Image 1 (cartoon, rainbow, N blue to C red):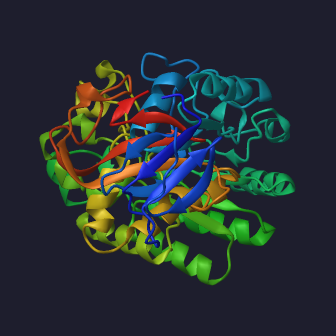
Image 2 (cartoon, rainbow, N blue to C red):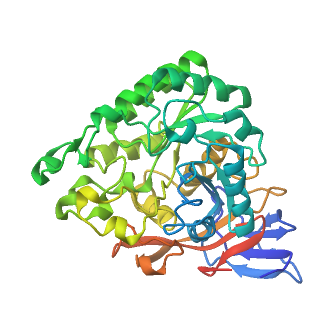
Length: 430
């Protein structure tokens, strides 16, 4: 569809009685009921919920270096399938995204693909080595305008280096996104430390390894008055630490993944490596604490941690398998099951946790905007009444490592618009 004007009809707009949206020249031109627009292409929403285009703070697109698992183009298509209009691409590529040159390469690849805006995340340390700060200022000043920095996959475990990074990014309103994992406490760890790991004979991954780093970094962020973001929170102890830090006024935000809102370590009973992830799946008590924290705002947003891997990296014995799960194409249905269908959040709050807030944290100015006249037409149409059986062979991602294979999930993304241009329509990429 190439028409300038698009009229979306029959929609459910959270917080509004309006049902129609007219898109013109990439902007929302009119919102109301019974709208007409001669010459416009009409898209029937058929009762679908309209959300501002989703924004992901935590995506692994693998390019450059691991194009066998994912490329910026294939990951962008997966993002559009999942209703995302902007994603932040993590730095653990090969070469590492620790220079202006590499982040600009990723940014340009995203522009060429055109299915979503790709915002590169810069590495905190050179080569993810944890010993020397990367070129933070150069990446911030580059064409990619990097504002989020992370060694995700690895923890910035050196407290002095973490302090210096927090101080450095303050100059350009950046944020350090920490992968909270004390490395000495998790050497060789395979699964959440607890009853299941003991029964399976797998080396346990203690919750305190995450919680100790979060506690330390909240104190550092508070001390230097700089923004800290905590990646993929997974334990109820972490929730307690974050809640207390926010009570004190610490400038910290946090994310939770869809899979940590739904899945537990019990699923590892059959040693299927599709459930191997970092941080590991935790207990039902942790899942409930994470849901409550997302509902009350202690955890600010949902981020997918989309982590594609080639087949050979997952179809092997547990201890040798790669850590990570696909997330972009199933995120909204999983969040619906965990948060909406349980009555913990409504669709207006989902818009906040999956669009408005991640855009604000990542400083993405033209995404996560209100559904209002004059705003960019970054839109997601989502049918919460639909249901589907997950078939990974139908995914747009190059990889197949989903933990939801064979699951029946609620809801389907039916359309995604990037600045008024449909990237997904009728459930099909355009």
